[in-house]
Image 1 (cartoon, rainbow, N blue to C red):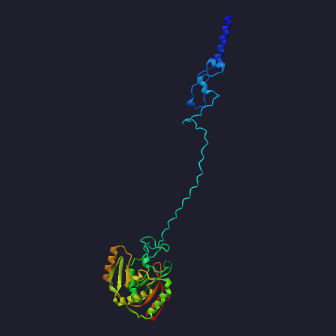
Image 2 (image 1 turned 60 degrees about the horizontal axis):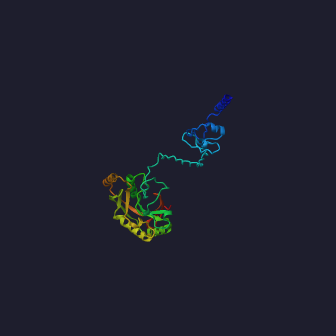
Length: 318
């Protein structure tokens, strides 16, 4: 009987051994952090109790938070949304460069402007402040020039000399002897009245251009000799005394009767060459001053406004 009882106990234990294999409790971790669980003991399996080594892995206890590794998936985090980007500003389209007209003159700086470079246009034109009348509206009013009125043959001879030596792309004028270069339009009634009064009391006088040229800073001039120079200065002095309150700095600075036959030439050798040619070929010229001429200034051009004949005569009103 004792053998039978021992045999039954042995089969029972064998049955327990076959069905209760050691189990591994795996925590909710990444594969690289899984600890190896310890097998349950027989007594624990029979009693339903875990041993101390596996108490941390009990399904009744909360599992530790998963650890993020560089190889495993990232924790459950909501994808970050990028703030909307504003649309880029459209690029400014460059304006096509305008081609110069095939018959246009070379560009140069305006001879009456203090600027040393840049295109001469109606938009960019500015006049030297020294050539501006001293009035409150001078910057916005029309300007006038007063010059001598020479006899035709004398004027033609000096104009031919100027045309030969003055840079063609800058030459807007014929030969002239200017008395005042910036008379303000706001004073035009007074100016014309004073001129009329003067010419009514003045007789024509001789006007003699010297045979000897003189140097300008960038050109060549021809003086009017004492025959004509003296009378011209007398006219200037009388009118300056009446207009001094509004004359420009240049106009109020004095007067010397002369013709400009070359100017605005920066090449010194060209200026010196012109001086030598004029000395060798120019013999001077004699004419008559017949009156005065009033011109309207137009961005480098002189537009005829009115002629005043000496002795009270007057013709050529614009």
